[in-house]
Length: 418
Image (cartoon, rainbow, N blue to C red; front, side):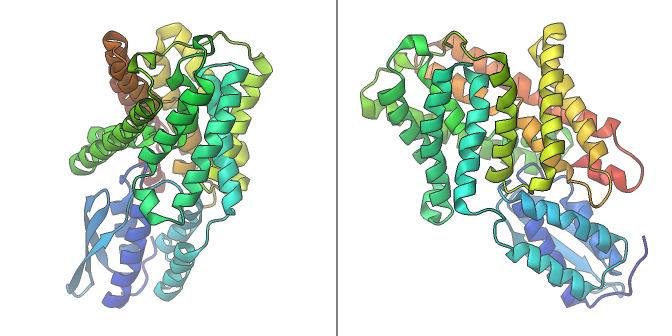
């Protein structure tokens, strides 16, 4: 790496603080690379940097070539909802590490990424969340009724998600509010006939955007990688989000006067043709773009990875069972995403993995387990929770293994670690 002349310590500290904050805010899938990214940029400007990380904050220590240093605390709540910033940040950091930018220009471009408005208007985010839910619906129950119910319930959930962008107080309790509303409407309007499936199966697609399956897997991956503090805290936060959704569903049951025994988990008979199941993943991928602010130019590689993940999981599940099929699919997804992401102008690995990861449906098992327990079906509920622990571990370890297998030398290794 070509190193620039030592930068002014205060200017370097300001740039690295801004960078650390943006990386923290986009670290919903893990903090694996934040330390190496910040340290690499510091070296490019003739300094050094070290981080003490927790998921929502970092203590950043910046040192100059003469030994003087600064220590600052940076805060940033981890999310995955502005992936356009992740896409814009990757080529910038590549230029910085290659020594191709002066500090002032790098800071100006970083500030522009940080201040950039969301790439899509609110109504496209609304549409994206609805399509995201609709694409997932056949995975719960492959029926036209499930799709119709999801269209209505998903629109309610999407409206609240869009409103929360403008009402910070709502954002703090959004999972609870969404789950309560979806539960009330789902039970009162759609769960009137057991032949159409259990109430939770009708609700889950609309709640899938809020289910913390990605956080659960990220927490497990961090623990497996030895990042004990960030992994443990993220795991606790994931469980808290899951419990909020569970409590919201129970509140809906209480409001409607429905007995908890109604929270059974029985799927209706399939009536969807094969072509609808195939097209559902296209709908799901389009929804992912708009819901998570992913640039449209990444649509094709994301769609390919979704179909590859689904195909591998289905094939290997028939051969070696659900856990083995999920593990192999995670390995293939991580390896393929790592290879495709090589190069500064390719899509970031985080973006490439996210839609394929969602197809593995980790978080829904937790919701189904908790609500089934609440309904008094103890054996089925504990079976779902046990499956959750098994599957989430299989996905996390599979993603780590896939990244290592596809890892190249030098710069590729850092990217693979994400």
